[in-house]
Amino acid sequence: MSLFDLTGKTALITGATSGIGSQQAKALSAAGAKVVLVGRRQDRLDALCQELQAQGRKAESLAADLLDSEQWETLTLTALARFGRIDILCNTAGMNPRQPADSLTQKVWDDTLTLNLKAPFFIAQQLVPAMRENGWGKIINVASLQSNRAFANGLPYGASKGGISQLTRAMAEAWSSQGIGCNAIAPGFFPTELTQAVFEQDELSAQLARQTAIGRNGQLSDLDGVCVFLASHSSDYITGQIINIDGGFTAK
Image 1: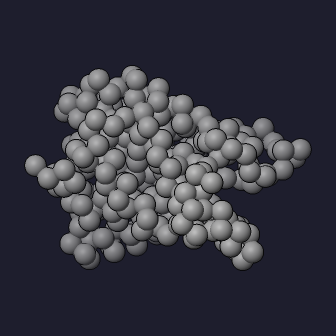
Image 2: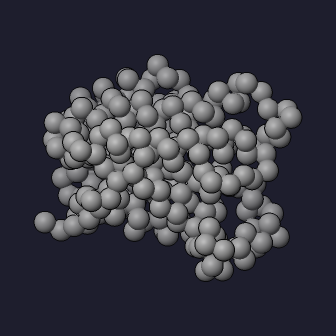
Image 3: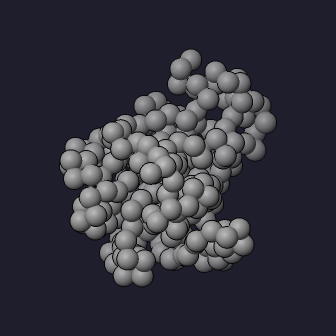
């Protein structure tokens, strides 16, 4: 058995239409997994599916709006019926509204916590029985630098990502004795839709790069190794952990 080989595994990735989710799909499919891409934008799902399939990889898509909790069960039941098994779940869909605390609305708060914190648990909960039956599974959540520190205009996002860190530990406590590993990645600053506002400001982007130990901001390909590691047998004795992928941002 190759520790990093995902041949025969199926991974479901939420938020796969851009950024980190799209990169996870590319990394996991390159390692041999069949990937099921989930997102709201069918055109982007189709484009990524076609890109991966053109490279000889196995990829399919399921469109869903995860802000609508009524779609969670439909998504998981459809995925299990169509693909037979989901071995790896990447809970990557998220939002960061960037609103000042004084003008933050209850709707924005509720939407952010629903998508970033509530959906990851309940989607996992519905996929765990099949993983348990197979005696193996991997869940990868997405935490953040804001899991442990505050950034301006990030109150609901920070609350949700702080919650993700503890949720990851609690999921590990609940399910890892049954063969299901639960970990999270905590990315630093990477060029995605959620960080577009940061990268559009050259001086701010440069300042954040200087704050890392490496001296640059992240490139999406920097996520590949950890993603495959956490999704594969190579991490079978690692669970309940939050791994910072931030170029040493949190080390300084």
